[in-house]
Length: 397
Ligand code: NZQ
Ligand code: ZN
Image (cartoon, rainbow, N blue to C red; front, side):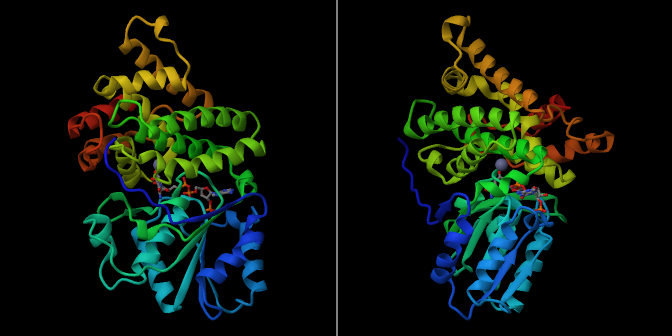
């Protein structure tokens, strides 16, 4: 195996009612009684799924009334401008603990706020752009998850969009891991089916982006990934058939975390080129993250499968249950595995082309510029050129 380091400092509590059961203990652990607490959330879904009331009731019950500062309106694909607004808000109100309530966008924005609020320099430039070591103390951040997808609750990754430069990018710093994460699957039952589909595909994408990278030979990380993918496909189908299936939805929620708590990344080179290509589509058009990935993955994999053939064969056999003897060659088997993935995307009702993603002629005209702006992954089976990225976009049309 390749060398690796692994850590995940986040304390997780999961299950129906976990916020009312565990939030108080976490607040006692991470905030003094006179601390000002910022509660960050998005456009208001938290007020319909019960998460907001649960958090507020616990904090008020602990005597924090008057020291709770709400920072709302965090949008999907959070912008650098919103993060800077949040950091000012946190500084002005002398915040000592942030609780993010929502999906990946809220969690990511609050993570970045926790960094910038305690930093004298330009966090976007120093950390997101240059990846400098993070040596300053960040504000402690706890999260209450309402949408399983990104796994942001158990890692130090935060994705921001700089609207001026059209750069959407992530950084993962151990210092940005939430100190606690509360996962109540009941909150997720109010998600519109469209978000459920997109979020679940994002989870599958995170596993595939890691699995389809070096080494190709069998290893513990990939063994876990294969099990996670089989289970996720089963739960995805169950949740599509009955979106209120609690068992499936709670499984999906924990799979999102297992996919992104770095355990399946141990010893892997990690590709994430589909993410790089999607992030730039989103930076220019604000498209939905999981839906953009659904369009890109099969096309991208048909470009690179020969470069990591053994892993694509394992994917076909161990994830989709295809048998070598039914195919004329490893290449045919590998392609059949990618076809099975494309079939699942169609079956789920996810978009399969950029047009279905909502792109029109204006967006099409931007594709050359978007392709040029993509980061090229160093961990991929083969590094794409900007020209090939444009080819992939065009094939996705
Ligand atoms: O804004 P509100 O009202 O909360 O509504 C949200 C939002 O409109 C809604 N929602 C969330 N929970 C809900 C709900 N609606 C009803 N019931 C609920 N229980 O869903 C919409 C989407 O939420 P958002 O947080 O944007 O989705 P997601 O979790 O997919 O996060 C997407 C962002 O995360 C980034 C993406 O690029 C994108 O910016 N990513 C973050 C990663 C990370 N931190 O590790 C990795 C990912 O690869 C990804 O890039
Ligand atoms: Zn993702």
